[in-house]
Image (tube, rainbow over all chains, first blue to last red; front, side, top):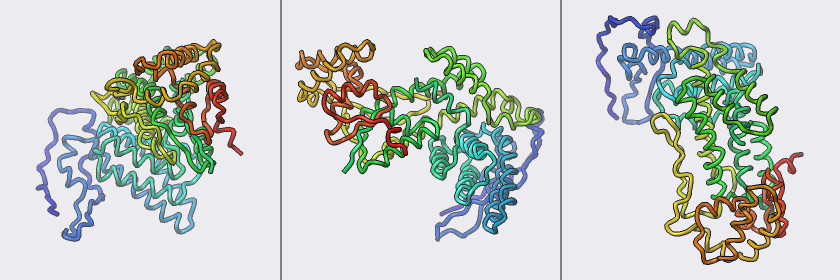
Length: 187
Length: 275
């Protein structure tokens, strides 16, 4: 498998000022994409290298990489704490994830697949109503976040597979008020 | 060996309703060794509940506003159950648990309208509905042990998006000549007559249409059976084709029971199996 590495672009600030300019620029997210192909060199490619000018053309993409990397770190810490039997710390790391999801949802112009997964994870956590997550649930959430870290432009139909996984593990990925809509729309 | 024959209402409960109702339907299915889903139920599901969900999605996509879309839903809800409707609309407007409640106003400076409360709620609801349409479509053939009664004149095409709107076409059959069930219906003239007798005095419009179509089928068996006839038969199709050793599973007992009784078949609701 051939890995193409783009040359590092020259970055200049755009002359036109927009609301998006206040976003932090081009942080390097520690999200790595690797391949299991045995012929590969084993070299890892960072997500921002795959989308090298994203911070200029799609500021929300650059911001999402930063937030996703932070969120993934919280979930990993939560899993680690749970495995060590520290339920309080495990749950508290998820509070931190929960607090950054609304801003991640503001990056949903990246695509409906991206927005749907963030929305589903947020609702899954909200619908727990304060109860701590189990290990399998944490791992499924981490899987969903990893998926949009490596495939931010995934189609909604593919995102649905991740959302079905959340539901199959006992989470409720729909907004709490959705049941009222379902009631009205099924008449 | 116990066997259940599933109708559209149970398919809808198992796929698209709230977690509690979904669970009840799935639990009921688990009580049987064999569960059969006729393709006719998939067709009705797409043309009914999914059509309404697609309408809601498209309204949100066009208006780009949660508030305005809920207004439209309220105007469209012409149910006689006024109290239930107003309670549901109120709950929707409140949008408890919405991600917008946790979206700080300061984010508007960063993300513009995408961080405004109305737009966040609109997209949250639109995405949830889009997922709620695609998820059951993916799982429709997995909730039962068997999918039966294929309809050669009906193409199961997944919902798709065009210009940001959800399209459900085709949601009808496209028979080259007549309905593909016609030969099998003509083999059962006496059963059609019995079912018509059971509902002929019903005051319900749906039953009157069904009785008229059933009568037409046994009085003029050589006449071409069309798409609309198949649609009018609805519940009668399930009752007619349910195997004799099966239990018809439906939430619509009132309409199914007279038809099922006329052919000596059993009919139950999912909640009849809850412990």
